[in-house]
Length: 63
Image 1 (cartoon, rainbow, N blue to C red):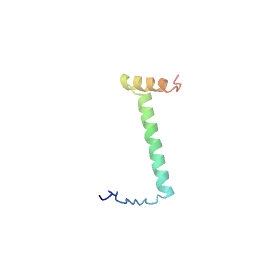
Image 2 (spheres, rainbow, N blue to C red):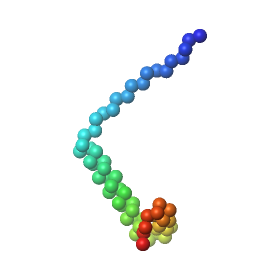
Image 3 (cartoon, rainbow, N blue to C red):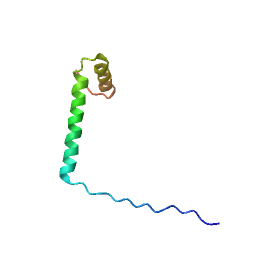
Image 4 (spheres, rainbow, N blue to C red):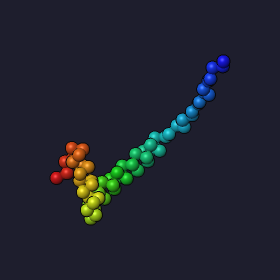
């Protein structure tokens, strides 16, 4: 009886330049800051309360 073999999978990872990594890091930071600002100063009470409860559950002071 033949032994089943798995096909050999080769992956090639393209190098990422430092400038590309910086752009991604800055973009992620700006997105995070926008989300925090929106949730913290939102006039929609449900959004603000959800963010407030999440901060408390993560032991992050907010007052």
